[in-house]
Image 1 (cartoon, helix red, strand yellow):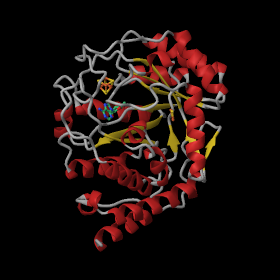
Image 2: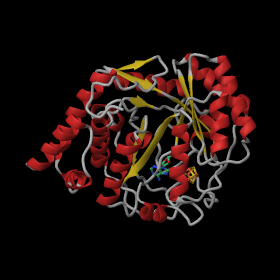
Image 3: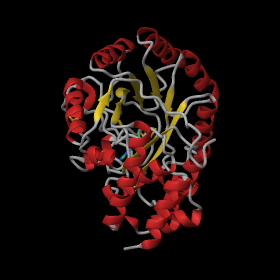
Length: 360
Ligand code: 5AD
Ligand code: SF4
Ligand code: FES
């Protein structure tokens, strides 16, 4: 029993923030303390229930291109992976996936790809406009990487509502260990600030247990998010991919991932936090446990079956042999098994109602 850590969890729940020193104490060695993790999860789940009830939001992801001109050391889509069969979906393919998705009850479409210059800004804007016109009650989320302010502005003006861009690590030195020299931490941060300033619901996030991640790195992540106040937070364990430089690195900790989900919920009660596919890959019931630890979003795949096994960020990704319809049913059952219901709604970020201590 580590009293100090319990007290800090209570403090976080009450004030929604901790100091750097307090984060350090709370995170250091926390993964091994099963009772502490349970304590954090039950508090975090109570907060999520308070804000979002027993509803879980779903987002349909269309992974429209696995071509990427970046070389992140951890990712199977990296340009340097010559073993991967590459694909691009046409605009019509993408719209057809969303049409299916709409029938299955998705009211948010996430368009995700590697950093593929083939899709010009005109193409992206056209896609967003068409989706917003055909499905006016749906949200469109983009997850297409680092762009300029002007580009983000153009997508926003075309109607994009949300943008996902994980910061990967808030520690600049650590960023340098995960990415080649032509990628910069400061540009990543610039992107996130631009997205927020343009009025996107903005998502950042990290891989838990990425190579060379230290407790200090996680403290930096929490301090960054405490200040940045992302509307969405993506957290999943790092999982090695056999055709990347990190093929022999250890995978991240399942327990620590759940713990960080809980702490993010306590820090940012209204955040949209997915129980990620990586969490479902590291443990068969990982996504259910993610929801029970405080997550409130699930992001099943809407990509055509023919390309699913080619969007491999890490080895053994789940759902590569399942159709959109199968995943949709699967998620419904999984959520019902833990007492939650899939909501047929956009599932926007709930603005703060001003009752919490540090509401802005
Ligand atoms: N393991 C876990 N997550 C990964 N991502 C990329 N590669 C991996 C991996 N090997 C995550 C990154 C990226 C998101 C799209 O997927 O955080 O931002
Ligand atoms: Fe490309 Fe994104 Fe993978 Fe990096 S994480 S290699 S930018 S798809
Ligand atoms: Fe895809 Fe379960 S969510 S098969």
